[in-house]
Image (cartoon, rainbow, N blue to C red; front, side, top):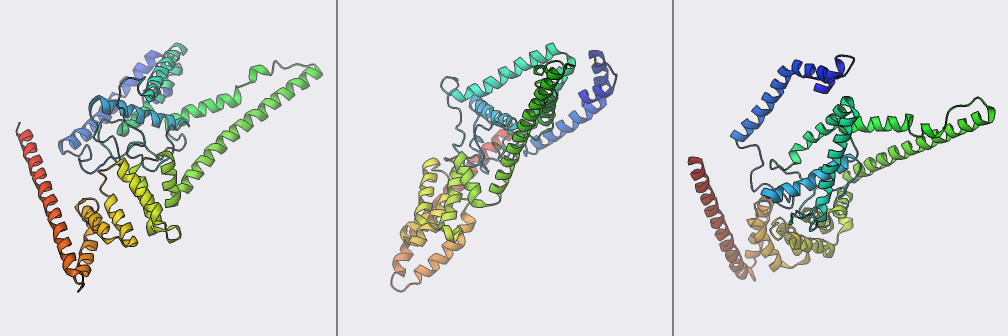
Length: 394
């Protein structure tokens, strides 16, 4: 806002004219800052600034529960990934969700122990060098650089300061932000109009030299045109391919596992493809292999039990099905879908005149397990509520 106002002002862009532009915008600064502070203070007072604990799990955002220096350093990798995506460098790859273990959290604070920390360190050092160069180049160039850096403010939701469900955004396929497009457009214009101009030499009136110079200029023009077309074509192919992957569940999940082979949620979802969601791809052995990977990655990801139950009942393994269905019923994220199946199944098997009595005993055993789990969860919630009330009183 300040830079635009400054550019619209006096013909000579000086520091004094920038100060004048800034002073004239004080009312707007006040309005913007007031609205922003009111928004954040209001959400903080009503406890809606962050997503409540328990709604986000590691399978969806593996960094949600991190705290302190571990959270800060890990989120530097998240920010580095977004900055890289904006400049056509994707260190991770495309995935509709970057879940547990897709990008490992930082467990060591020494760069030599975790080489990935050299990425944010390099970005910071590069930014400092560019800033110094821009300052030496003049006020106009420096303000252009500041405008570019202002784009980083849009990454605030994924900076780790507040708890959100997204860790890395998949929507950034090619540079699309205002600041990146502005700088990229300027670089493209400079490449087309200026690159190679010093290599063609001065124009000459002599016939052979003039013809040679014309051929040289034409060759550079063709070369630059080819480079620009290749660059634009590669970005078009990238966007088209990613858009096509989003149009089908199979390609979307396959691309996710290609980038994040240890994503618990993607492994769970693709198992559904092979357990009957797509009849032509039905393969229970393959579906179960994905589910075993899920439990290996994240043993606490309770959604997996409902899918195990779905596979076991197709195999005719009813005892394994009963155990998994019981666990699915105790999972708050699959309880709603598991309860009707639980009621329907036990109603049928307990009514069997031959094996009904044994089935009733098994049902009673599982009911006790569920009741105990519900009681423990209730006690945990009551304890948390008492601790919260104590904190509020203090």
